[in-house]
Length: 433
Image 1 (cartoon, rainbow, N blue to C red):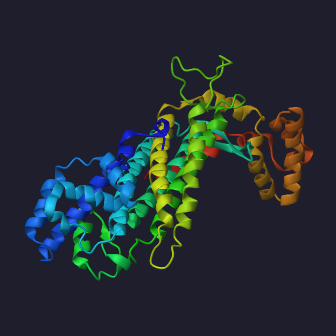
Image 2: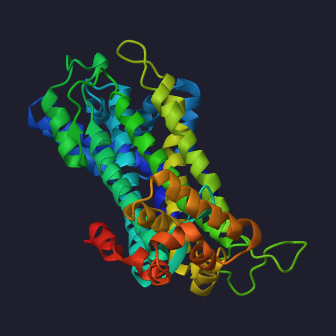
Image 3: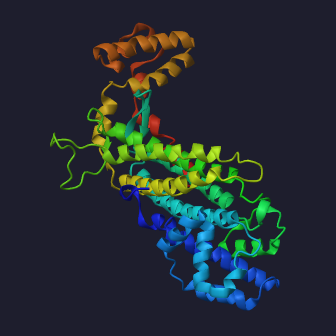
């Protein structure tokens, strides 16, 4: 988590101040629940809330205590007692450190997910707007990087919109799965704490009680959460790579907005490089990389160990902060993307109508030729265009075998570009409703 790739709202979720404030809320809500069922005095719970709520936790002081105790939760509780006074003996009754740590982590991940969902919504809005803008902007589709058949630039963006709509649904599901609470005490048996305390804390923090916590919340939940972030990152890279390819000089069908005063190269003043989408590609690699250690965290020893702890202290902030930054960068790229329809048309025309080869192939089979004969007839004429720059339609009309089955008028009709656009509305209706 470095400032260059961080946005303040997401970074704030992972600040020490935010973490300690959540720790306090967990402890204070637990104290209220214990007071309600008669485990601790109500006055003590009220004092904990009253004095803790206005406390400004001193990070340096907590670090100083932890340097002696070698235990972060104990250090925090010791510092909290300095504000609360004698009633602090009723804090953390029957609880264990993981109750605080795991519940806090899930609060942070849920809050991070809320920001990420909003980020995806911004990207979806940009994709939808630009997709409708270029719904009928003709461009060549490519397979293996080679000209295939025509599509529209709007369909390309609609494809991305559908993919990120799925990603949004995945993230909503991952947020729901991660938003659990464990206040179950040592080994998770509730031996020293009433399950009603957990239910109260969960309700107050917008979580659900973990069915079986074994002292720690099961890490399959976290594995799924970070895996979902990795899938989102992969979708971002797919779209970023598409833009990078379209910005290549030989293609130049679209490019990132190049702002006044922007410089592309320290050596070559003419350069306009796809630096934003290249950056997104790199950040996507990092987010995906965080998924693997999250999966490895699932296999803890018996009821618990803390091999997951150091991992999550890193990947929790890094994955969410990085993805938040990258999603907003990608949304900005789409919002300002410069599109060149005339260049798309020029590239489409480069191969003299070869993109109609399948239509000719199918027409010949319908006229009685075998598929093999039809393929051979179309391919030999296509290769004259490919290798020598001949006009594909003229070559087809001059081919005796083709002419036996298809009239010049029929061939002309098969080169009508509208043929390839007849179901654009259907695709858009499926994607956008």
